[in-house]
Image 1: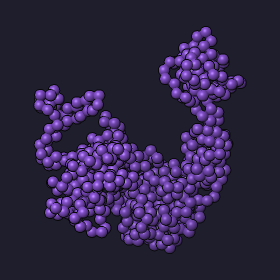
Image 2 (image 1 turned 90 degrees about the vertical axis):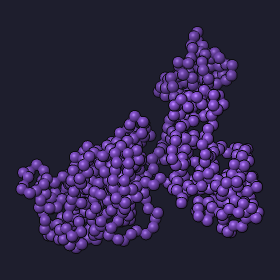
Image 3 (image 1 turned 45 degrees about the vertical axis):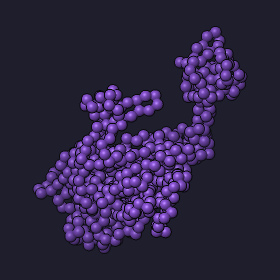
Image 4 (image 1 turned 30 degrees about the vertical axis):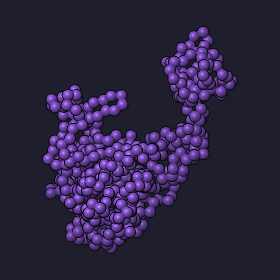
Length: 598
């Protein structure tokens, strides 16, 4: 039986498997020096099938470990070794062992043994031993190193078990062609297959269907620098100047032409920020210089003020000095004529500051999308007015408007539409004339409020979908004339979650943003989490930076889809993908922080 394996390292792992007596260790003892000769840095993990000890009785490290130290680290100037007592009933776990490897110091990990794991392997085989092949029941065999007498199917990569350079060639090629597996994120973009036409969709299928209908706004307008926040750039911003404009000093100190045995340097002047030194620095000369001041002609190095000793018109320096240190070259951040910001970039404070530093007073941006919002239902009351019997205050309209405004949209509030076909038809037609997107909440469940379905189908092209998610299962989407329509669920939390997952990407694409994806951050769950295989679960969570230096997350408590307080208490959504049904404390989950929109 094979055992699943996931490589936790950013470098390849390659196994060598064979039956006992085939010569795995003998081959590796010859292969390792050959790979070292070629400059390949190696780590090797060997699975020992018996009780072993790498220490020697009588040594201090041995005695300390036997006295009860669970881990014993011995170090010298040439090597260090960590011995860990980790008694267990089953074999050691390779991913755990791999995490002990310093991956930044090696190019590949070679593994001897662990033949039941589903990791890429080279099988060693000698016909004279009469043993069966491993590749017949292991699809992870990449190649077979064997003797001349061995017969193999033509499709298998054959290596000569006695030709170490040939096997080394294969390992080097494997390193060069290896790519890490993509992270299996919840709701990851699809592979480009045809969209499913069923009425029950995954979250990803719903997003892909919606985006296939969205055409970005093409109309533009020129807007002053002060008004650019949250707008989307319509054309590349080409830098009219170098940034920095002049080669300048990164520190307060002294500028000079670096040369060996030239100390002390003769002081010939001072350069303040906003001023320049008129002359050219000669060998053996230095000027006092402030941060941001232009480096004089002839000077190529700056030394810090605190490492200088100025006396009697001369200055000498302490510490090591390297040519060009503490000097910022003209244009090293942005060169004149280079693209400072690409078209389709959403602009915020940092981008506005950058554009200001380049001297831009105004820029072309795409026009803001217009969003019309209304609520339906005789049971919904306007906040600020008396609450009628058996009614609720309308909260959905306000959360939708707020999120749309934060995405830079112009918002039209159509209020609460009464429960009648005529009123709803008029509202939809008028909204479509004014807005790029029309959004309603409530009454979209299949079978609920049939006249709403009837009216929507009369005035536009509408799809009613069930999305395999919680909260927010029902979703209506379509077109009314040239406008997009979203019918969101009625429960307040479901409205917000559905807006984040479906309306947000549509608005961003419509506004001109390209290739936007939601922020997904790994975190460690502190509580058990449950979902259902085949469904994407969005739990309200609170993440924080824990004492271990990692993000940890826990739920806000009860997760009812009508509990708006859970969104107020939380700072993220915990996203449990379709493949998971139960996660334990310590497991890694992915979160969507609220910072972008909420």
